Length: 478
Ligand code: SF4
Image 1 (cartoon, protein in one colour):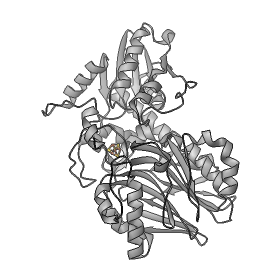
Image 2: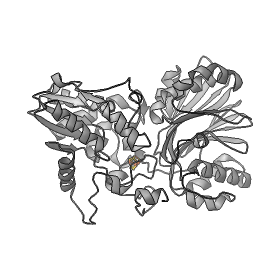
Image 3: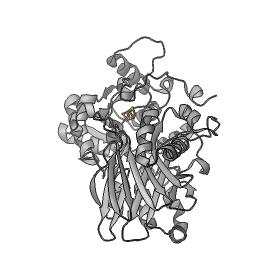
């Protein structure tokens, strides 16, 4: 099954301005949410799609702006959590007179397949977005409006979604799932009377628009020639905002649920320094790039110098890319291979390395090895996210449970301390400390109960499922 996380945007200009240049700017600003493919859809046309980074299509921007000219459009950058990175799986997708872009994962898409008919399920080539869109269109034909269809679909689906839609009757819609797993914001640009809905406010900043507010979990927005309308398709009160967005996924400039991501990460570092006050440290360094603000906060709180001890080679083929969201292990390894230590900064020091997460352990192991080669006297590693022990069914591609570095594999229940010690030995650090949910939520300034920590707690009650964990081979249908 092809599953998606990603970045989405939907734009409508009430002044009739051509919104395509704004969609392109927004997608470039959302590139950190997906670097495999991108696309744009307008009413009454097949979507335009390209593989690779948005910037790699720069030669075609003028042509696309002319040929797809429209005051209503949606866009998408793709990060597949499974499946092939081909153009067919790129989004937006068109089903009848509705184009759809999706950020999230629909974990029971196989079940939904049975409800849409005419769709033969084959792992690797069916997209959960396509199945959800087909089901949505069926429900709309039976129940009239999109809001009615979503209120039914939300009960049939397991997973997370932020959708943007553009319809052939020239309306843009945006919907956020009832738990608010994935982020979505509403913005406005005054000079051309344009509404924008996007995964993150970084997209609004890129086009000179103002952040109006977060889209509410369970809210459907419609933007059409008559203006902006809002309706709730769910009255859910218990939210589950993804905590991983705050430590890794989101752009530092974005504001999410009222918190700026850069400042939130810096505070996470400060709170971590209180949890793990490594007083004999000589320097604090980040693993580039997402952990940088947290390392700065950690260093400032502890009163230890912050240094850039590891630098990412931005000029290698994959240098500018984010390793975690690369679909293939070989590419992740290549990106991490080009994180180079600065010997003169590291040599002879007790180094505290701050990273945003520890998933498979391969990159941490490589980084610690490189720091030892650069002459580090002692290496302590602190992780801004809690221990990841369970798969995510709400839009982030953590590996299957058996691929996680925390997996013990013998069926016995291990304490958090025992797991930390096993991981510490495996990556070769002198000390390893993980953040915890309470500390992370307090640093972000949110109620812990309004955030999702399922991948560390194993409590899937917010999704209403008790998953049967599969190996990677089983997940791929091999
Ligand atoms: S399980 Fe983890 S990664 Fe997935 S939505 Fe929850 S916090 Fe985010």
